[in-house]
Image 1 (tube, each protein chain N blue to C red):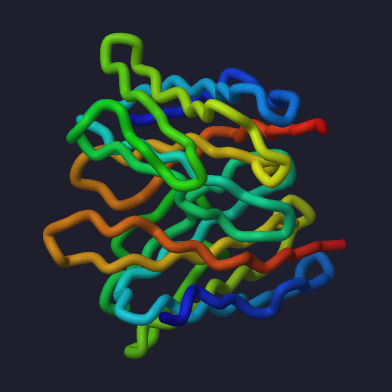
Image 2: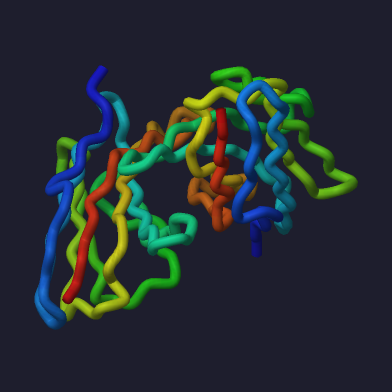
Length: 115
Length: 113
């Protein structure tokens, strides 16, 4: 069973730039969600994708956007980067639609630093 | 709306002594509750979950948690700490019917020899 994999592991960008983070979901999982974990904080929900549609969003501005592909992998895009976007970005996958809650399985995250 | 309060930002114990990590929650709906652990430079690993079955939940690595509705608490315990338990622990709530999670701010567990 392949777990959740994220790339890249580390990234340094300059304020104002754009960034794309990638996530491959665990085998058999059709739902992907993204979380932002600032230093010293718990993860905060950004959004969730199910069957290539966004079906839930946290309190993040529109410059945070995403995609889910037919193979259930996903991208997180952030435009006009700000210093406060520096954080660990975590991707999690689960198997929705089974009638039974499927716990989230997390990747190891992408550490984004904005200078 | 739901929220999670982890009452201690840091807990220090000696190896072989009991561990208690405290968590209080609030939720508008019957929640599911979880504890996740995060080792340095790693993702989050599910320790245990409460989903309205038995109120005492056993997880991996000897951890367990008790759901107390009257106290809105879900404290995590382990009888005997091991050096490998040193990590950050997150208490998490998920309202019924929703799949998104609300995390507490975390408790760093330090284990000394």
